[in-house]
Length: 239
Image (tube, rainbow, N blue to C red; front, side, top):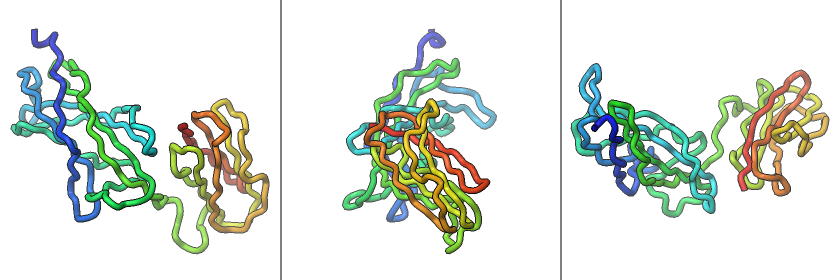
């Protein structure tokens, strides 16, 4: 009977805690009641444990609730505690979680989490109700982009923000003077915008704005040609 019965839905605690708060920033900590079903216990190399799957949804816009949940991690809880917890150390690049969000300004990123319990027969519970937390988006320092006055190599950055609505910034670096072409394509390879059309540019750092107001939501690609250097990256327009 136990093998045919999935675990009960995990019960999460609200609000989301913030782990390792140093007075300014920290990491989301999701806490829930440990499932009590006997078949939740698995035998491990160290001790018995209970298994859960973590799912996360993200939205960069205050008017759009996160809804597209994707698998984040599998968490094995070896503690005998009544509660289990998971710390999300992998919030998206360019996002920080303030310990005190009041008064912070800028672009917000909204996170929602759901938990699924998995018993020793690999039967899964229905997802828990969601818990949520708000982060603050900042433009990250790209490892490909140096802070020196003169770029050392060609580089095309990931657009920011991404996903975007309706505008986003695309940055690139040139270590030498050259002709540059920067185009945007839709998912079937049609050119939808020419941001830089075979223009001669001096060595340096550049930022170009792309406006998708007249385009439909979806996946787009932007490509650069600068001398012999070529690169392509993907971006997502959400309306």
